[in-house]
Image (cartoon, rainbow, N blue to C red; front, top):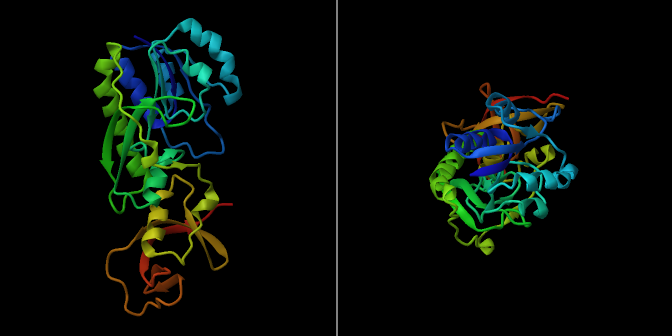
Length: 289
């Protein structure tokens, strides 16, 4: 079996390795150049390709259609997309002789779209997962090929959950590869009415609104904790990144729960929230400008 793979990030690296280990011939990889303005904390698909001597390109989104003749000439059995950031044109998807498959970091149909792990934590979910599905022109809408769930613990950050999702993605690939290698694509309906689509997130979305409940603020902090841009709040004339909070433990009896915002008591930092509950800020630091 031959494949063309669109890949980036840890999921891209690990799933690409799984394909290679299964004996799939990777004829070409499309990946991204790292953004110098982004905190790149994840593994490099380009470096993996160099070490494995796999041909790769880093086209811009506008250049993808120009690659159609090359991909048609390669005549891949499968196209795979593993955390590739650009929408892949339908004309490119049609180059796959058997199927074009995408790995998404949620339990589809929930959390279709961008930043699925972050959104799941923001909404207080207790589980998420990885889903391999048929690629269509509409994002994350095709039939489900394989799926595995993972738990989201109450204090886990997006990075920690993403690590779980990355492992789940590899498990999904390894489970379905025996059938894919035989040219069989297991599939079940992706019932879109049971989920929602979410867009990307901007650093400004990390602003803490102390009028919200303590749990909502805690979920925001862990959903965007570094190496993501981080939740932030003003304090004494500067912007502070709130990197870690807890809803547990002994809280001083002299906290004023009537005034939302930051309070310092006994050399400890607390955030008072709109539901008259407190959370403790365990890690915070000034934002860099």
